[in-house]
Image 1: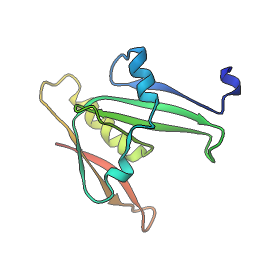
Image 2: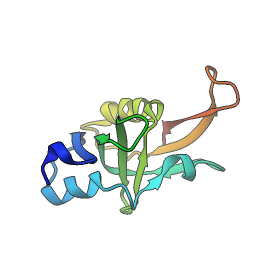
Image 3: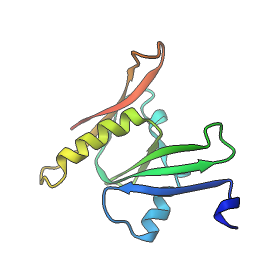
Length: 128
């Protein structure tokens, strides 16, 4: 099937390091990933990231046909996924600042009430 006739496609557009073909394929397949929205519904979540990536998705069957997913793989191998740009912005800011540092780090992922949308929460994170 040519790429032009596919209803769904995804590609890694950015990652924390150079990826093997197997890693790239694994990151694009989010069917086995834990959704951050669900994982943070009742409590905060600690993640010690080993690998992360931004995925561009095209899905003809979605209301929003083109969107991004953000994947973070914990040191224990658990893969987390979200479409939350607020999380991704906070996470990549932390990761960029920690790049090249020897100090061990992780993130606490949690929800906060939205100031822009009453009654809704957004996902963010802080360094631990």
